[in-house]
Amino acid sequence: MTKKIILGVFAAAALFFTAWGAWYVSSPVNSADVVTETVEHFVSDNDAVIIRDEQVCYSDIGGTIYSSVSEGERVAKDSLICTVFGGAVSADNLNELRMLDKKIERQSQSLNESSEYAEGADTESRINSMLRSVADAGRRNDIMRIADYKEDINSLRSGAELSDEELLQSLVLEKQALEERISADKFDVTAGMPGIYMTYTDGLETALSPENIESYTPSAMSGLMIAEPVRLAQGTVEEGGVVCKIANNHVWYAALTLSEADAEQCEEGAEVTLRFNSAGGQTVGGTIYFISEPEADGSRLAVVRCPEYFADAFSYRTADIDMIFESYTGVRLPIYALRSDEGGRYAVGMKGSAEYKCYCEVLYTDTENEFVIIKSIDTSPVKAEDMDRIIIGER
Image (cartoon, rainbow, N blue to C red; front, side, top):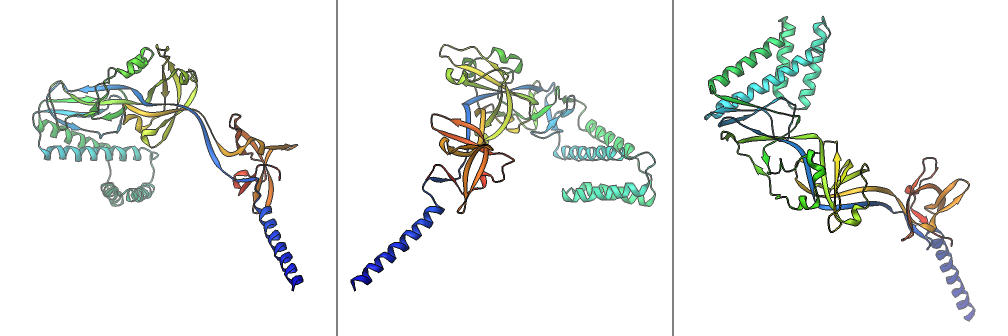
């Protein structure tokens, strides 16, 4: 009986050590899950100031405003953006003007499309092209455009001669006649520069200008009377009143007030990335354009020039912005998990119970906290990013 008990104990112990050994081989205690991490070197200002080249547009007469463009729409230099008619204008007349403008726009597009045909192009080619355009308009659910194309196709098939230029001219004359009936006194507002059409102001259009950037300081920024943008009166305007403004959408600037320590990390001409925390973390590239002289507390103003259109830069005057100098994304490892051989640096990865050499490059090293960020090299047959675990030491 005693012998049977002893044999049973040995059998149980053997079973336990076999199972433990299998677990130890597949999940060694000196390994870790593959973790992808981003390390950034950045400074922040939660009240960074946006500086734009802006033109405030005024009306020489008082009356009813008819806008040819919509809020946030891009406009070209010298283009008509709105008309002010002296006195009151009925809603019916304004709606008729909008319909004529839409027809003129569509006819202008049609004229541009027809000019793409080589002289003497056959009728069938034009019909086939218009049929493709009908399909495109259908996907956009542009019912009026579809109707125009069908009318043109029917005219071509019936042999009627189309004159896009004559039709466009007749629409323009019709609009002019309507404007004359509405009021003998009118004032056209045109864009003095290309940019974004806006119908609100914040009173800082002249206080903040790209031309004056090199005179700005942290004190100047903190002294600004920044308030919520004021929506301009819609529909009517008094003589000399503000109708709208145009903001340059090609180049704009962000001014960040930084502490002495943060400012020391900045260098004029350095390329950086701005992250708008107040706009869901969207990013845009730029270059440090200007760094002011230090104030009494050591703070400086760093101004970043951004030559790229970014819609949210036109929605704010101040924003919570991170200025990112460097960013590294890869697999995080303890420094001692890196190995090397004649093939270069590598980490030992595990997929299931199998082990692989994952050759890599080191993107970032933190000697203080003893970790690295690595990225597998293109020539490595297996990638660290595809592993289940990384061995971080010898057993």
